[in-house]
Image (cartoon, rainbow, N blue to C red; front, side, top):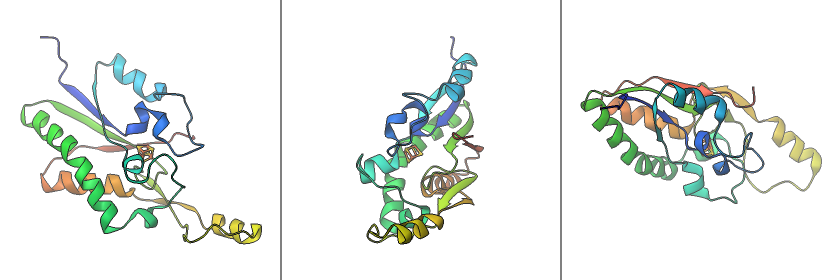
Length: 171
Ligand code: SF4
């Protein structure tokens, strides 16, 4: 039996940058800096679904945490997290180690230590000064994005303790 019984759960775009909102993709496919060391250490990977792609599609605009923080979106996150949660429970019940959950810092969905807040919504202003003022309100704020928030809540309900770690992709 060659299985290592070590698993890491990763945000969808760490294995598939195509999920990211335009124009953000710092690599064509998988984030090799993060993924290759895991492969070298024989860690198995569980890829979480991308909540923004399934909720808003590939023509979505950039959004902030408060825009995603609605009951409907939280319910969407919860519904797509149900299957990976069941997988995590199955592995931990069977004595496998889930080492960590890797999110994407700065994301309004998958941020772990930092998320993005501040956009006030509405029509895109035609006036460049008004648009610039709206953009100035964007902030990187300590805290989790909505999707990781829901995952943490669901893990807690099942008393499953797995450390979260945010990846800083622009750094
Ligand atoms: S929502 Fe999460 S998985 Fe999807 S592109 Fe953004 S950071 Fe990646």
